[in-house]
Length: 300
Image 1 (cartoon, rainbow, N blue to C red):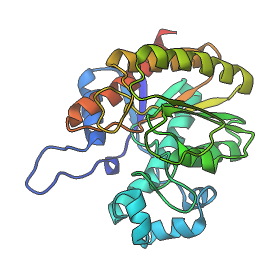
Image 2 (cartoon, one colour):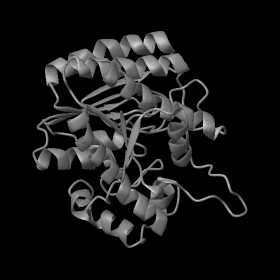
Image 3 (cartoon, helix red, strand yellow):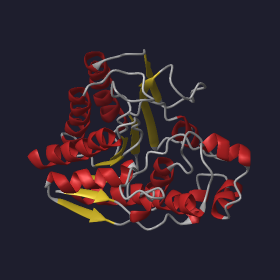
């Protein structure tokens, strides 16, 4: 059974004169529904502002809540912060937190949004407003749900915001495997980083992940994995620089889930990046990740 967190406000409305939804967040849910896989959809609540301000600068949180984000910060984010964007920015961390709570019960759950790993303390960046991974991790630990969390970031871009926000914490381990020459130009320091060369393909990528992840799981012994499962490492991705195939992404996700399962560590995933003119192809990659993670969980 796939437990997936989704809210209608995750989805951008159709443009004027158009009936179809071109937003990947809506298309992902369409693909999941069409798959026929057993699935339960859970609706998140907005993350309370106090938990967001526990990680982000309260002044920046107030700018977002009052729709008063300065133009320079909106440029850094990549779009204006409107009422709809603000609401989604509250729901996304609520969704990642809820997915984690569900994972603690069911072994695996997915937020069909989130992965906003570029958002920094006092500003968003790179299409990210608030850092749902850092916010959720902080709340889960503060409320006693878990003691130690691994934030495993396999998006093609380094999780610089997550690394910065969680720096110095002994109870959160940040691990990022990414394309070294991709955005952001200035990398932060995760607990463990691996920057890969352009056009790294399946074999080298999986060898690196297969070497690093078991060691981290054994040494750090997390109670939960928050998995930034971006699919922008795909060879056809518009913003990626790696060369992973569909089979490579499948092997990546299977490796993560099997390593977690043999250690009885729950996994909560969020979507992360995936870009390209064929929105349906991107949506299928995201949906396939959730379905195969749930399938590995059922098979064990």
